[in-house]
Image (tube, rainbow, N blue to C red; front, side, top):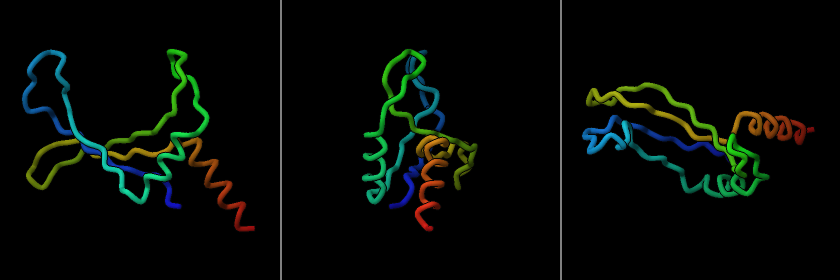
Length: 97
């Protein structure tokens, strides 16, 4: 199974209707062939966030980018947390022997 890895793009909001309107908006794209891996991750043991609530974490990373039309935006990836990725890589490697 492929490692879960989705992408997102955030663009500066063209019009802020109020002070509470977001500064950037966008979408996350998850390929259909990676849905099972995402669902599997979402079923993992929850951990506590800073409020003490049970959560399942995803990692996000973003890079400044420029579209072909010259629009500045943030392009990024959504994946399993780094610690879990490293543990899975170690487990996968040990399966080879």
